[in-house]
Image 1 (cartoon, rainbow, N blue to C red):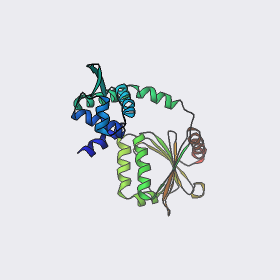
Image 2: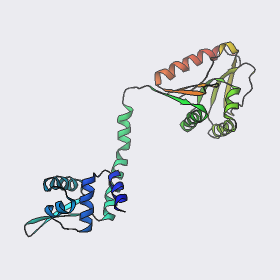
Image 3: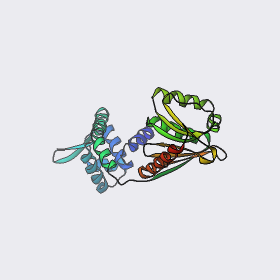
Image 4: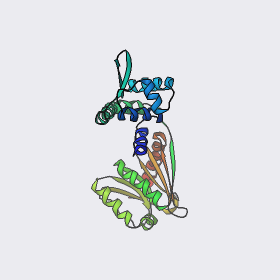
Length: 238
């Protein structure tokens, strides 16, 4: 049981020697530094340093009895309350931290996803974004490769009232969204991959071996892809 306790206390930020001191003081409160040193087999100088750190954390407190300093720890139920207060404090500053994060310089994130499961991950992330999007080259291969997963995607997008604006191959058959707008291009005008653009994200899908998706997150790159989409849209047939 003590090994499990030690493992969990280590997970919340206490180091192994601090955990030893905490458990010893739980078993026998009101010990001196010398007594703690003997029971934990940690040299007394280090014990003082560790106790100082634990007192700064609010986990250990001290008092003087007969001119000798003694130490005790928070009881288990108060330890839980202590860490819950820390979590509450962190939750309160999350908006400020997010604001700082949003001020960082525009970065480029590029990820490669392999196979059917990888492509499903990309599509699920896209659905979670709940953004209108533009698509180039919706293909029958997409529906055939993902099978019934395609129907689930369509149902979710329709339920969220997501608007799809897409360029498709002339004469191609595919499932349309309720809130979709479509124009057609001849086969030679479309790229060999499907392109999805939403927010600051651009995704390129390859619908043949090796099946994969390349997800790029960058505002400027997405803007350029939207401009390219706009040029194709102007030349496409209703």
